[in-house]
Every structure is written in C-alpha cells, then in structure tokens.
Length: 334
Ligand SMILES: Nc1nc2c(ncn2[C@@H]2O[C@H](COP(=O)(O)OP(=O)(O)O)[C@@H](O)[C@H]2O)c(=O)[nH]1
Ligand SMILES: [Mg+2]
Image 1: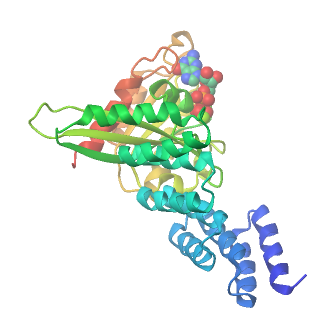
Image 2 (image 1 turned 90 degrees about the vertical axis):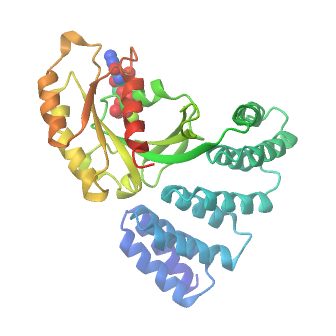
Image 3 (image 1 turned 60 degrees about the vertical axis):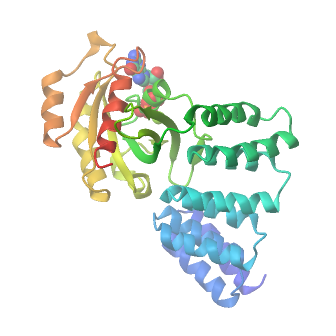
C-alpha cells in the first residue's frame, strides 16, 4: 500500500474511534502526499462536520467535488453539510449534480423534489417528481406531486411571505419529545436522519392568514429531534446551531426530568443566542402519577422568561398550543 493510502486508512480508523482531530491530521498527511485525493478530502470534511465545524467541512467537500465533478459521495456529503447549516438552496444544487451523475436514481429525484417543496418551489418540485414517476410509476413521488399541485392551485395571486425556521426539542430520554412531534406533524421531512450528529428533522408547514392587512405567512418549521445520546452534556453543537426557538420537555411522572430542564436550557444558550424557549411538562394524562405541580413548573420557566404548558402526546392536550406559541415567537421580528 502506498503511503498516502496508509494515512487515509489510519484516518478512517481514527474516525471510528471518534478521535476526530487525529483523523484530520491523518487525512492532512495523506493529502500532502496526494493533492488530488478526493476521498481524503471527503472524510476530512466528515470529521469537521462531526465537530460542528461546518465551514471547514464545506470547504473540504467543495475541493473534493472540484477534483472530480462526478464524485457522487462528495456531493452527498456536501448536501448534508448545507442542510445542517440551513443553506437549502445550496443543498438543492448538490442534488442537481447528483441527478446529473445518476439520472436514473428515483430516490434522488424524490429527495430533490421534497426539498424544493420545503422551499415552496412547487413547479421545480413537480418536475422532479415527474422524473421519479418516469423511472418508477409507483414512486412515492405520485402522492407528493399531488400535494405540490394543491399548493400551486391554492396560493394564486395573494401576496404571501415564506419563512423557514429551525426549532429544536430538548429534554431527557423518554419524556415524550418524539411522541409530541409525531402528534403534531405527520409529514416527516424525508425521515432525514443525520447519523453523524444523532438528529432527525421533521417538517411542518403552518399558514397564518392576516386577511389582507398584511401578507399571509407560510411558515415552515424544521423541527430537530434528538435521536439517542439524550444527555445534555453530550449534545452536538450543530444540533443547536441556527435554531430560533426551542421546546424543552420534562415528564410529569419523573421529577428529576424537571430538575434537568435548567441544564438543557443553559446548554442550549451556551451555543445559541437567547432564543425563546417554551417549557413543557408532558404526560399530563397520567394524573395519578404526577410528581410536581404547576407552581414548580412556573418557577422553573420564570428563570428563563419562558412560557410553559402541561401537555400530553397521548391525548393531544396543548400540543398544538405549544407549537403555536413557539411559532408566535418566531414571527415577532418579521
Ligand atoms: N401516557 C403518556 N405516555 C407518553 C406520552 N408521551 C410519550 N409517552 C410514552 O413515553 C415513552 C417515551 O416517548 P418518546 O416520545 O420516545 O420520548 P423521547 O425519548 O423524549 O423522544 C413512549 O413509550 C411513549 O409512548 C404522554 O403524553 N402520555
Ligand atoms: Mg425520541
């Protein structure tokens, strides 16, 4: 094996052991020996991405795809980096390259169409879905195309303002975060699971009508859910980056989850600005097993100037209200 390959292999091993800085060093050595080593650029980018250093990651992916514009893996990782940063238009461009490289890949067309839907580029989305349907007449794109067509029919000439905002949902394991999102949203955003940082993104579109006084608002909430590693000391900074609001959840049947709420909030504020937080005491349907009361919750929320709700992902109690409350905060500056 040549020396640059050896360093590359070593770098992969370091990645496996989660020694990201060491991995970057190995990839750098490999790249010194072979300046056009696209795989090494891609993996170096992945290491940066995992460290939350998205600018440097993007730089690596860009070099990799410049070296070889037909390098599909390079475009895929670049797309993920753009999604993490919320550069959705740039993510679409990566997908365009992937469709150029693999024009017969149904999944890429569906992904691109779905992303365009999120950006309210409905006509572009329909074109993508058509391609997917051409490849596979039974594609999931059939349903999605119908949805896109409905949007085009519905918006017509009224002026609308379109916004995309990221919020995240925090709290100890098993308090009901994922259940709350499921209750609120059915439209999973491509089930976009970002394994490097252990997050899952779900999309919900809310339309707010002002009846002529102001333009209507179509607000797309990108809801980030933690998957695994539900420990406030262990959350990837990228998870918080760019969020404009947060739901911080505890479980009414477990007092310690309430005691942990301030830690979640403080941990968030270490990375983000002082974005609005709404606190939730979930599982309010289990009245007999309650371990704290409204006063405890109010005291906690007051410390952070946040509102609070008692919710139940089971009965649906206050679920809509909790998300609307965050929505209201998000629109304040608009
Ligand atoms: N009774 C009741 N159970 C709930 C409620 N929300 C979640 N659960 C249950 O609590 C468990 C953990 O929920 P999950 O959403 O996975 O929690 P997460 O780890 O915070 O995402 C699951 O068994 C849910 O069915 C609720 O409001 N009431
Ligand atoms: Mg969960």
